[in-house]
Length: 103
Image 1 (tube, rainbow, N blue to C red):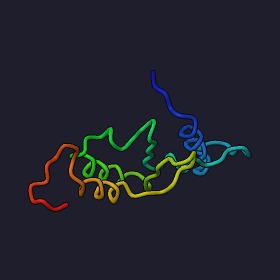
Image 2 (image 1 turned 180 degrees about the horizontal axis):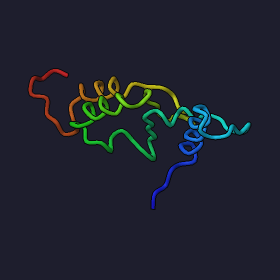
Image 3 (image 1 turned 180 degrees about the vertical axis):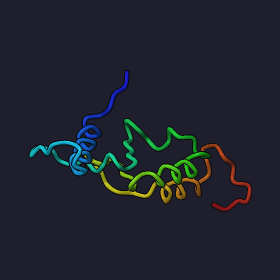
Image 4 (image 1 turned 90 degrees about the horizontal axis):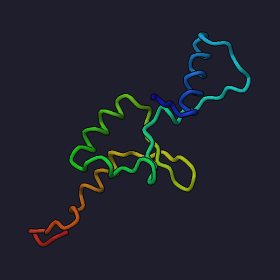
């Protein structure tokens, strides 16, 4: 079946309330993190996407998202996956021999 995480469902209710499509509930709070790409080293690590596709996919995803977050120490912090990917791509892949002799 289809599953939607609780935070996503709450944020959708909040958005619909803001648009006047649902009756307001005093307990309803936004969950803006669901509008961002979210990476968790355990549940959704960056390296699950093949390295040669990451940059192109992140550009597409970020076009539709409101930024990106990385889970660290139980909290979400903002980060730029394109910048992080550029840093990863600048390093040789494991087992790659550097022919030029420089690193």
